[in-house]
Image 1 (tube, rainbow, N blue to C red):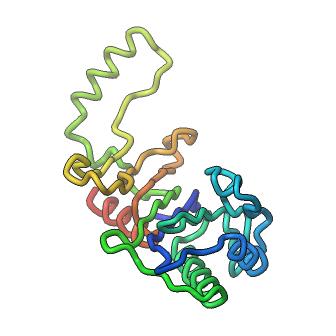
Image 2 (cartoon, one colour; image 1 turned 135 degrees about the vertical axis):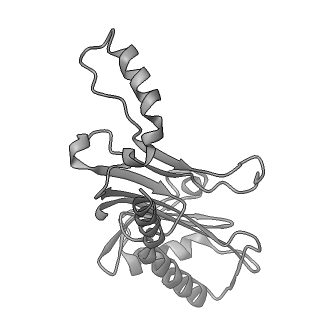
Image 3 (cartoon, rainbow, N blue to C red; image 1 turned 90 degrees about the vertical axis):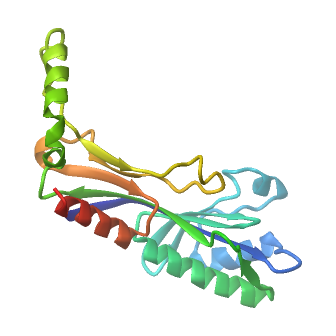
Length: 214
């Protein structure tokens, strides 16, 4: 398995101001100056709008911070880099704002953070090798469809989803783990897309584990 590119990374950190809250215009000035955001929310109306309250296109240690959203119970950071960069950015942002504006934060007791990692990878092995038990089902699909769609290539398993019982965890909503062929790429390229509720490095380790099980 080789990483082709990081498509997107989202890091969500949950916390709240210990007392008194934060006057966001002061925080916005600090963040814009320190991380060179090209757009920051400026008015009360901006902070009430889910799009306008975003801080857009900043920079941190050579990485573009696509956006950050500040909420009463935490912050959401989007990049196209390893989630370790986002975690480091959030740590530095918190340190800057709490020291300069003289307040402290407390982490949420149950969920402290969550991630969404999206990557494209080259796999050395074909995913369908793990699903040979489905050959009869695939043949039945192919035989039926070929009767009225001659130009369709052969159907085969293309992906894997690992999920959890969401009815048993109603207060949590981590993303499913998905590994699937990249729809716009020929099967010959062996390019796969994957999304997971994991830090980038762990995400890639899981993909390696899955490929090793083929």
